[in-house]
Length: 251
Image (cartoon, rainbow, N blue to C red; front, side, top):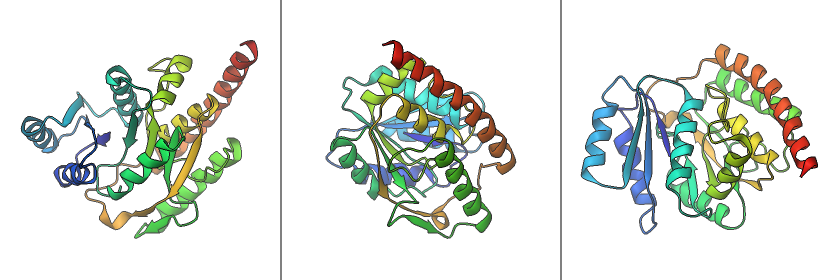
């Protein structure tokens, strides 16, 4: 699954690399166009018409990562025929290396519900990442670990993960399919991870080096807006944790 916003410079290349990485697998590429205003819609239309392995979902306007995740996950839950299917969510700007897809799939297949391509576990890291962005990412992850410590989880905020569809279905039953993600912005990554952990997800990590130098196009992250969203989401998740705990006690 590829969340996309104005990625005309990279999206065709990324999709072709995914095809190469998944040669021999049964797969479907879900392109989630979040109201792009550049040539992205035209490129996706062309790719969809040429091959049937790409499904394009499009929002009429830019709605943000949270809304796009909700649309994409809802689609996956609607079409998946097995809880053992694996959903990989990755970035569409060439920073998510397609060679890592098979590693994520293998780890999910070995018994995990969620596997994170982690910058903060041993062997992971950054390349060519601006200092300010690195400090922000590091601080956000410390904050999440402080309020919601999860065993063996170091990276709460990266997009690049593998999910067993069964855990998404279980979470959808608890939170409601469209209640699984309430955040609008980039904090949706952390919200989804914590909510899955609260319903018993087995979570693991593999090392991943995030090379910002590969990025095509400008950053869509607003640090001030994202800081505000983290504060609101932390308070919200504390309420969610209490409600899920109460449900577990009653059952």
